[in-house]
Length: 226
Image (cartoon, rainbow, N blue to C red):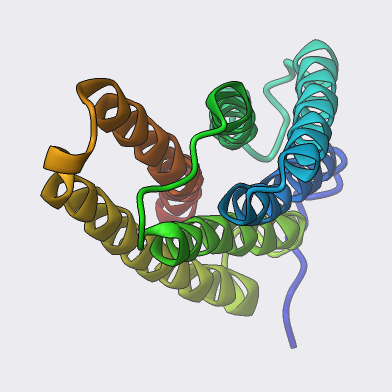
């Protein structure tokens, strides 16, 4: 039977509840990105615009939650987790939503279809990057349980396994992004310099969605190692 950390009650309520609410909004924002790219690949400009507006609205909601947490997160030394660690995780998760919005703005502003033959690979890379965010969301949902068990026991072991899954998912996403980017460079002769730079920046944003989620996971790994 899992034991309860006797200090948990003294240390106050779990500080992870607001972080979890924020992460759910970030994940909701990220989940729109494959729909955005699918609309781009199909050439559906009205749908592209609609989804981009939805992403911006969700990113704004995530920002509002982040600001509220910054204002109200206790500064007390009696929190079970260092306030700076929580804010670092929060900031990285919010970066995920920021990159989703930036990608949406870029794709809508230019409305360039992917180079011939790359639409499916582009969408595949996006799906893999968003999958990393979903794994991170599952990890965040487990964090308040860790407070109850003193960051040890079965819950900690489960989170460690999920962190390994996060790293594997991120590695797969990175490989997909690199493959699409290499394909772009192979077709560089058929792209103008402006198009080559544009698509390179698009793929950077796609990759950062996964990268920021993994960096947040690395902070959690450090918490478990202490």
